[in-house]
Amino acid sequence: MSDFGRRVDRALSVITAIVVVVMMVHVVAHGVLRHFFNAPIYGTNEIVSYWYLPVVALLGVPAAQLQNEHITVTLFKDRLGDSGQRMIHRFACALGAAVSIGFAWFGFGKALDEMAIGATAGVTEFIMWPVRFLVPVVFVLVAILYLLDLLTARTPTGEQEAVIGERPVEGRAPTTGHDEDADSTRTGTITEGSTTDPSRK
Image (cartoon, rainbow, N blue to C red; front, top):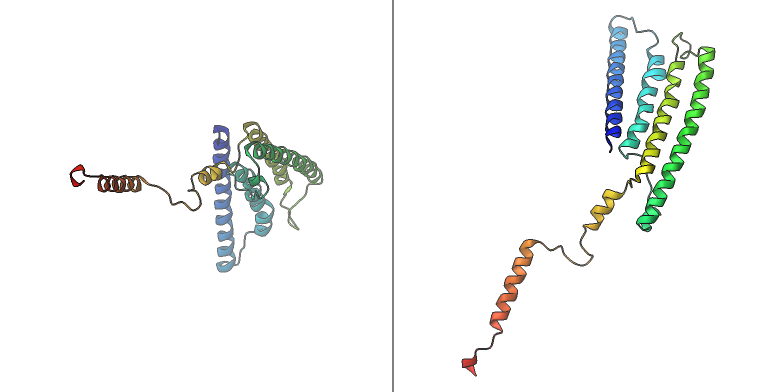
């Protein structure tokens, strides 16, 4: 992961953690006030549904891209050579960037429409349209990450390929330094035992 990726990942983690903690405190306070004082916090369900959860869910998309946590199926890709795998990886990055730009464009238009009408959360008076602008921001960031991945040609299965390359050949046990010493000792014993003594002739 590059320095830019580490900074973005750290920022996303901090923001998400803050939102989760604030949501937890809000929900607990709402439950306590409703149960003991019959005074629930107005609009808690709408705030959680239209503010907290969308922020947590959307920020998880670029975080998953940075950490290679998206679901991938490599049945076809694993059968190709190194050049073929790099080509497939670059095509997937280009396609992901294009789709992300499409989502960002559509989300930006939807956010402008809801801002124009002053969209609110459910039947309450809490505005919710500012959160809609997080959709284009997040997907533009995802597109940038795909393009950076495309330029660096980073193969997600590189680490797996390195591990597979270290596996022993099928049908042959792995050889360690101790086994080699034992083999050399046995070889020396056999050689000494098979030496012909001239005095015995």
